Image 1: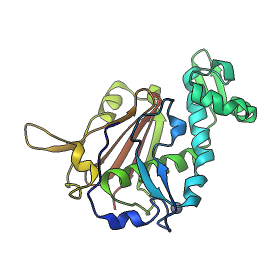
Image 2: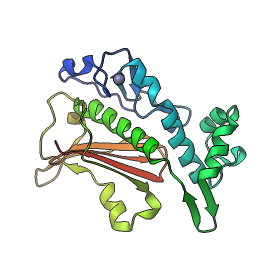
Image 3: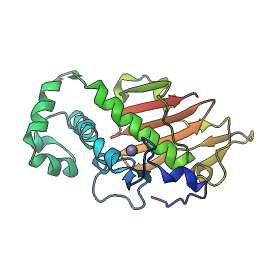
Image 4: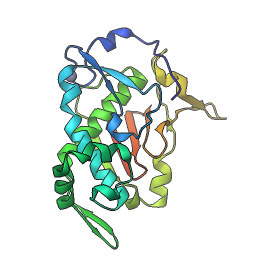
Length: 230
Ligand SMILES: [Zn+2]
């Protein structure tokens, strides 16, 4: 990935992005569990405490495995497409066994019994991380909305609307990374653009259109959006 430096106010980065407690380490957003090896260079990282850094791992793994099984159309290790996940699951057969109880594949696709709490936990973490990385803005308040779904359930218009750049109604803080990712239309309107972390693995966008908006696409099949209108 292209390295984009942050020249914005450093004080925001003295605390954990997720809980605003004391700093201890740095956290990849997205976590590597959503990516395939070889990993891209210059992956986004945000300041983070040790507790948060470790606290999201199991839920992130849950979502990554869930999406990998759906993408591959199977909960059997040999049929999974992605080597990175296969490697992780080799020594942990229980995870796939549990997953096979939540996903029922049939000839029309699949039926899932999703653990919504775990998925929301991951999406919220990812969104806070992207918002911090791009806009140098920590968000500790609960969001005004969390949405996620499978691309297959969206209609054509919804899909097209989802992947558009986000029109800015407020210019980001001077020097933050979002400033180096702005498109300007012929009419002079400013938009933020999508960041492709890795083809077929992960893309995200952060914007401010009367509210902070974070959107992501994982594994080409799953989309999410988190909004803070405070
Ligand atoms: Zn923390």
